[in-house]
Every structure is written in structure tokens, then in C-alpha cells.
Length: 404
Image 1 (cartoon, rainbow, N blue to C red):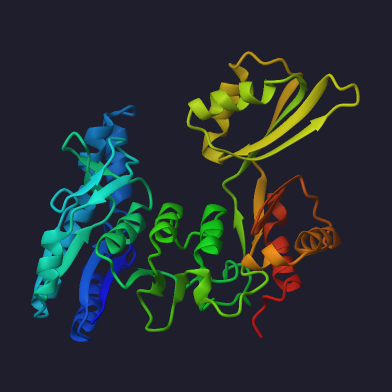
Image 2: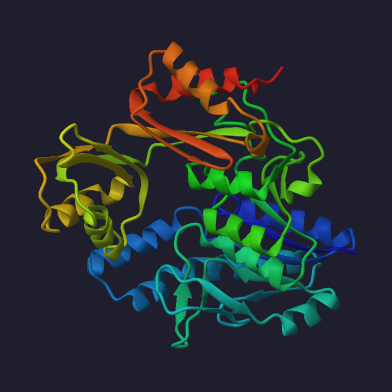
């Protein structure tokens, strides 16, 4: 007997028929003799509607009341799925985040999970009852409902799997696994059987939409084995696991891209100690995440050009924060027509020449690199957005990732 957490996203529970299909999948796991907990999102489109209603009422609304509203989507789905399971003869009970409870910090709208109290749930699961849990929500220190932010149901599922000491967390979505790159752009992309936590974290952080970054971080921290599967097809998925479980590691596992990037360049900033802190300090205070950073010192040694990237949604705020910071510079140049392309693989740790191949491949296609950043298992470059598809296809071929 295994203990399994199954998570179904919004498209998987998009209507009554799909919820009934989810109930049948869950029943199969129960009939296989497994203890099962299910985490569900709101039905597709529901959360967007709830968020929009909050904005219509007041653009600057109370975050606690916002959570009260947007958490209701998952509550509907849990109840419907529990009813569907009961209709199939499976004993089931729904749980809201506050009923377990899933305890979070007090940052409403983007709370972080602190602890999950699972004693009662485990007792019921051991008696054969399926627990249907609302993702995305918890209970703050003020005893009010809190929500975890976009994609929070993935995080709920992995956190619950860790708290339950589950054998595996199966995340069902509208794709059937993790691919070497976006198969909508590169038709010969391959589905991976296994991928390491580190690689999946890098893929998620640079634009791959399969798993939410926080959920991968939590899976890696607690060593929760996560499987990505299709809700609509019965076929093997991709296992996200420890590096030790992968016998033969690929040099490069995947190529990801993010269109959610904007570039900011400050021309002729005074080159003195503390200037970087005076730029990035206010940005951090404004909760604006800065990614890639490049600094070029001028010939006279008195000024420098400083380039960095932020999310497109934060570009206008970033420009205002920098302009209000009291810095001396000649001009600020912003460019939202850029994309970040990243090559990822644990094999980079022990092999040289990965970066060289990336740069040569892009150069051969006439693609100019604007900014470069690296980590132990990732190389990212910023290029013009119009070259996105060309860059992905060329790099996918260059690293031998095309399906046979």
C-alpha cells in the first residue's frame, strides 16, 4: 500500500464532466489499495473572475477580504469532487485549508505555508477515506483565510505530500509531462522520463509553465517525489526526483524561455562605491525582483552603464523607483521586446564548452546576445523577442535534443 497525493489543476476540473473523470481516476488509485489525498484547484476561469470582481469593487482592496473571496473557488471544487467520489461508492470528505488546518504566515494574497496538521486526516485515510483538500488556501496567524498566490495549489499539494510522508505526489495537468522545450514551438521536443529537482527548479524559474517554482523548491527541500501527468490521457509522465535516481544524466536536459522580461539600462551612472546598492536597494524595497545584471565601466573610469532585467509587469514601477532614487545618470532606456532563453542541465557541472556551443549557435543564426547570466547548471541569455522560435529550434538541435 502506498500513500499518494493527487493534484488536479483548473483545466482538469473545468466542468462537471471533467470532475467526474477525476473521480474515476481517484477511484482507480483507491481500488489499487492506496491511501489517497486529492488537492484541487478552482474550476478554470473561476479565480480570474473572483479576482476581477475584487478589482471592480476597489482597485486597492483589503488583502484579507480579497483572500476571503478568491478562496471560494477551491471550496466549490472540493465539495463537488467529494460528492462525485461518494456517487462512485468511494468514501470521501472535503477539507478547506482552515479545517486541517494548513497554517501560513500573515502575508495575505501570497502567504507561505508554515505547518500542516494532518493527524485527523491520516486517521481517516487509514480507515479508507479519501481526503479532498482545497489547494491555494490556508489559515493565517490572525485566524483568517489566506491564499498562496498564483499557482499555489501545486505548492499545497507538495506541502501536503511532505506532511503526510507520501510516497509520491502526482500532479495532473493539461500536458503529459516535462519536455526538452516547448513542443508547441519545437515539434521534435522529447518528453523526459525523469528530471532532477535542480533542473526542474531552473526550468520553472526561467519560464517553463509545467510546475510552479515554489512547489519545486518545497519538493526539493523535503525530497518529495513529484510526477507530472496528463489529466486527459493515460500515459506515463515525468518524474521529478533526486539526482541519485537518474542513472544516466543528460548533458543538457532542457531549453526554456521567458517572454516575461524587460530590460532597463541606465546610461552613464556615476561610477562610485555604493551606486549599485542605491539602485537595487529601492527596487528591493518596492518588491521588484531583479534578474540579470550587467555593468560596463567607461573608458574614463568615472561613469558606467548598468543594465538589468525585471518582469514586464514591473517595468513601469521599476522606471519610477529608479527615477525617484536621486541617482545621477544621463538617461534611462527601457526595452520590453526581449526574451530570456536558458539552457539547463546537471551535466554542465562536469563538462566544459556548453556556453561556447550556445554562443556559437546563436551567432550562426545572426542572433545578438544582449545580456548573459549563469549558474552551476544553467546559462541564460537575453535576445530580441522576434528571434525566440529560431533560437529555441537552433539550440534544441545543437544540443542533440531533437526526437529521433
